[in-house]
Amino acid sequence: MHYRRLQARPTTGGTDYLYVSSNNIFDKKGYTSSSNVVTSGCSWSTTPTLRNVDPLFRMTPVDADENLKMVDPRPETTGPAYSDIDDVSFDTFFTKTNYKGAFGTDLWLSGLSILDVEKKLPRNTWGIVKKGAITADETWVNGNTYMLTGQVFVKSGAT
Image (cartoon, rainbow, N blue to C red; front, side, top):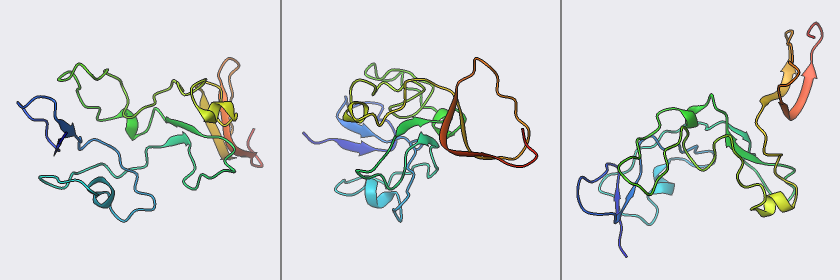
């Protein structure tokens, strides 16, 4: 089957197309341009335009290998994966969400992936991410979940 590859949704012509939104995020770490990945082996009427921004995944290393300790592919709710969401009401195949990509705050991979079997996924909880240096006073509230996704250092003078 041949699919048309389009940056703009067709107004007619059925479902034989791959729609690539200009709101799609392409974090091009390690690539010189988004077009050499997206257009490889494809014929486009025009080269697609994508958003080149860091999606702010919670805990996804660029250089993952067999020594990976843990991965959390969910994006931060304050990041670009939660803005400029396309209206998908034109196609009943899609489910409307408030985020882009496969993951929101629910880590639905739990129980379904070798990552979970190998204990490389965090618990399916959502919380406030803490990592790096704490340089000013903070109050951590009982009842909140705090996720330490790296080393945390409380610097002198901060409590």
